[in-house]
Structures are given as structure tokens and as C-alpha cells.
Image (cartoon, rainbow, N blue to C red; front, top):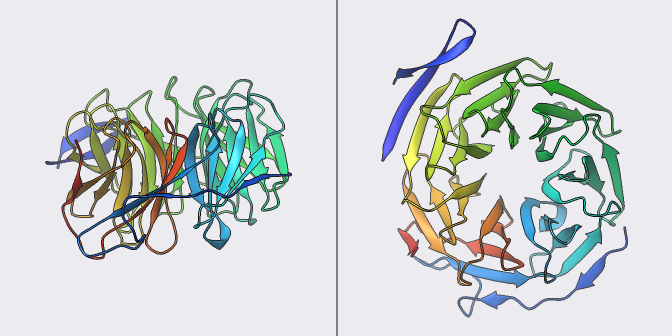
Length: 344
């Protein structure tokens, strides 16, 4: 089901109108079919175990077709090759709770330390550098690279958007409304940065100079979570509280696509096939939505994995973190579109 809205600014507000040394482990993959190649009408899911108790959370593509991920419980940064070779890098700060991760413009990976109140950087050899955030207990969450060559991040408890240079200089921009709780951020199609505000049910936009505007969602309690720029030049985001995928144009027109109740969509990414892919935490599935709003779902073989982060990988694959199963999953879509393998 598709629902369209648009937002307009009125009197300064928006109203709705209709319209280091690593640990290297060689792992054996758990395959769902004998050959790990996408075949006509069939998606193939491969699961790679990581260290027990790691709690893999969010993932990002790195150089050389590798996938990097945070280990929220293990307090490490993980790296996995397409063949399943795992390397883990311990974070110097104890109990830092690494959360989000992204590829930086300097060839390294950058990540947020949710409890450590730092932004971290890890090189391909595992050397980690940590940069403190000026605001105490800011709870940094999402992070992404901006078109200006800096990293931008959301401070959930600090109620700010942060920017950090490759040299570690941090600038913070307070949001205009209290308790917005910004969570995730992405580079937009218009040269600005766009972010979610689950605390205020808004989508925010900040220019590289720090000017902020906000778009209110159609109704309260949407809880927008993760956001990404789609190949259509719009922003796509998950609404975990109402089981919907949202789309907002750079001018503020909002469209929502309804999922089956109880899916709990979490992270979202753009696949090499030009579709949007997302995790369904409660349903234990990976979802796909086309630019036209057609939805398909693919079941994860291991039950109750709680899929969290997702990213596009090499060779048309999507990779995702199984937070409750301590695995990294890889899904190779079918060579031709189909209705999905179905979800319980």
C-alpha cells in the first residue's frame, strides 16, 4: 500500500498537506544451496559465523570487496573477506560499544563509539585512532562520509549533528528542537546531509555550512530509523514503529510503503540492482523494495538472528549483520526478479 504526503514550511514550521593487531580466523560458510551463485528465481543466503558474543551490529563495504562491521558486545571492529576470512581489531577504550561504521574518504573505516563518546578510525592494518566528542555523553550513533571530505555523525543524546575532519577536528551543530534524538545520517542528492529524528518523527537536512531544516512525518510515532539516498534522487528510510518504508523527495514530498505488520524494518541500503534492500529484525528476513514500491522478502535460514545492519557488496550481493546469532550474512539475489522466498 502506498500513501503520499508532502510538507511545506509555514511560519518557520512544517505542516502536512495532501499530495591494530588483529585476530585472523578462517571460517566455513553455512550454505543454503550447494553452489553459492544466484540462479534463476532463487536467492542464495550464506552465513559466516563470527566470534561468539560479538554482537555484530552495523556493516559497511570497504576496499578489496571486504565488509567491515561493528561488534557492539565484543568491543571490536570486524572485517570479512568475500570468502569468509574474519579479522577482528580490539578497540582501545573498554566498553566503548561501537555502533555504526562507514568508509571514509581517506581509505580508512570510521565508526561511532556509542558509550565511549568517541569517533574511531581504523586502517586496513588494524591501527585504531580515537577522537573524543566535545559534548559529554553525546551517544554518537550513525556516521557517514560527506561530499566535503569530512565525516558526519548523529549525536542521539547530545541532540546535535557532528562533523569531524580526517585530522580529528570536531564541529557540532545543535538541532532546533529538543529531544529529536537524531539517529542516522546520509549524504543527500542535493549536496546536503540528511538524517532521521526518531524522537521527533522528522527527517532533517543540514547544509555543509550547518543550516538545518526539518520535515515532519505524516503522523506521530513513526520512529524513522535508518536513511539512505536512492538511485532515483530521493531519500529512503525505515519507519520501524509502523512497519513502513518511507521515501522523501528533496522538496519534502513523503511517500510511505506498508510492510506486513510485525516486520520491524531497521537498516536500509542501495543494492547493485538499483533496488533498496532492508533488514526486518522481528521477521528474521531481508526485504527488497523497488523504486516503484514493489516489495519482496527473503528468509534467513538460521532462526531468530535479528538482522540489523545491511550494505551492498561486490558481485550484486548484499551483506548483513545477524546480531543475535553472531553471524555475518550474504544474500545473492536471483538473476531475474521474483516474488521472494517468503517470510513466516
